[in-house]
Length: 362
Image: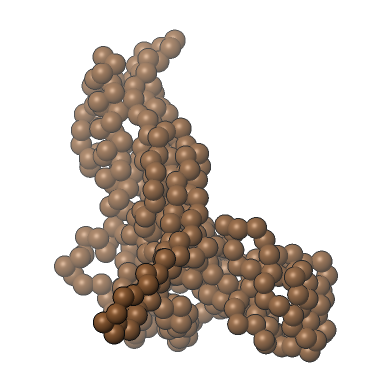
C-alpha cells in the first residue's frame, strides 16, 4: 500500500502543478536561470549569475587581447514552504479524483497554489530599480549630500518615513540611489541601490542648494484617459535601461486593467490564444507590454496598487513539489495525504533595472 500511496501522491503533485502552470502568471513573468537543485525541505540556496555586456572590437588583422566578461552572483533562497495536509476517507475515491486532472479537488489545489505563488512574486515590487517607480514625485526644497555617509540635509523639505526604500536623485548625480533611513523632515540617508553587497554610498558630494527627486512619493489616481500615458512612461523606463523589447509584461488588478478595456490604445489578445487568455487573465497588449489582469497584485484601492511591470529576465523563480504521499490516519479510518511545495524568488542587483511599478488607484 505504501508504494501505491506514493504513486498516487506523486500523481496529485503532477496534476496540481498542471493546473498551476495553466493558471498562474508567475512562470510567464519570471525566469529559471539559476544553478543548483531544490533538494527538499526548503531553504535551499541557489546561485543566480548575471554577466555584463560584451563589447565589440575593431579587427585589423592582428592578434587581439581577450576580454574577461564581468560576472556578478546573487543567492536565491527557496524559503517558501506550503503544505497540503488532509484526511482521505476513501483511498479509492481519492485515487479517482487524483487521476482526473479536471476534478474539483485538483482544480482547487492548483488554483490555490497559483494564487499563492502569484501573490508572492507580485509582492516583490519593493525590489524594482530606483528610478523605475511611477507615480507623483516629491521635489520640494533643496538638498546637500555628504560624501561617504550618504547623509542628505534638506532645506525646506518634509521628508517622511514612508519615503524609505524609494529612489533618490539630486542634480549632479549620474545614477539613482535609494533612501536607506529617515530621521526628520530635513534628514535622510541614501545608499547605492544594491542588496547583494554591503550598504554603501558612492555618489560623491552634492553641494547645498541642489534640486532633487524622490520618486513615486504619492499615489496616482488613474483614469481611462490617462492610463495609456503612464504605460508609455513605463516603456520609456525600460527603453532607457536597454531592456529587450520582447517578453515585457505588466500586471494590474481588474479594477485598473478594466480601464484599458475602455481605452482606444488596447490591442486585444488574439483569438488563437483564447484559452490562455481566459486562464491567465491576459487583457491584451499596450505599448509592447502583455497586460495581465490579476487580483494578487499588492495593495488596495485606498492606499494604491503596486502594478508591477518588467521583463522576464528581472525575477528568477524556483519551485518544486519536494514531497508527497499517503500516511495512515492514526485513531480513525482513512488515510492522510501530505504534500510539500517549496519555492523562492530573487531579484539580483544587476537585474533590478528590468523591473518597475506603477502606483495606481482608481
